[in-house]
Amino acid sequence: MTTEWRRRSGRIGVLTGAGISTDSGIPDFRGPRGVWTKDPIAELLSTFDAYLADPLLRQRSWLARRDNPAWRAEPNAAHTALADLELAGRAVTIITQNIDRLHQRAGSPPHRVIEIHGNMFEVVCVECDFETSMAATLERVAAGEADPPCPECGGVLKAATIMFGQQLDSRTITKAVSTAETSDIFLAVGSSLQVEPAASMCALAVDNGADLVIVNAEPTPYDGLATEIIRDPIGTALPRLVAEILAD
Ligand code: NAD
Image (tube, rainbow, N blue to C red; front, side, top):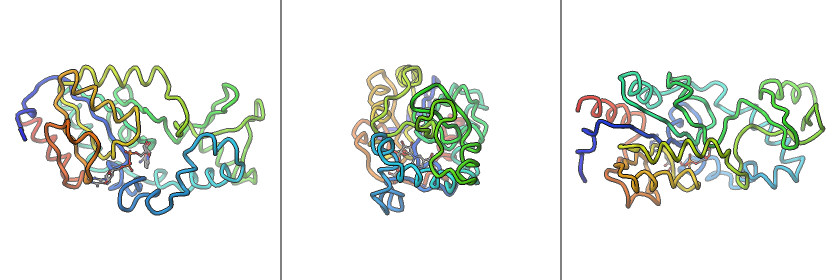
């Protein structure tokens, strides 16, 4: 293992996953206390075909959105450390798989955060161009519409997240690819790196000359490509790593 990568002065790409937000009280999916680890059926809530086919699943999905801890979550030390890295003058672009907006709330500039899997605070119609906020939609749920239809066309509404079986937004993926290809340092933080194509940004970065640094408690399929692997808790490991990068 080499620690020399900390001295590289160029662009820093960061791929974040649910593990960066567990310290903010939002459970991950596949970690030991993950939502899917505890309740495998919950995976269906993130599966596009099942969501479209089953009104009862959609009703459950709206209630899960209502009860999502992201509404009350605050950014933690790891989100803040990444914002500080940018504030210190480093060129940082974050590709996040998270839908919780905690990077932006920690101070990372919104145009420097690529939400590759969308966000949970907006709602879209799957049939037409209608868009609205999650808060407004949940008010309809509270008022008695268990599965509120699109007010424009009657179609199915869903959170503006990318579910399994859905195409990623092409402009978003282009930005993510460009970030991976132009990074000198590529940090993968709090992700099991099992969801593609997000995880493959690690390989793309390495193919284009980046040092890949993985910060995650559990092994990932991309560990073999990493210059350094850090298994310590993200809430302490990332602020330490950022301090080391800025010190070199
Ligand atoms: P994942 O659940 O597959 O993996 C999270 C990884 O983080 C696990 O390997 C776990 O061991 C590790 N981890 C958790 N807390 C940690 C900590 N404090 N220190 C060190 N390691 C820690 O998450 P993923 O790879 O992001 O894939 C899940 C998908 O679900 C993503 O696409 C994401 O969109 C979505 N998701 C988002 C949120 C959110 O927005 N906060 C939460 C859950 C799931």
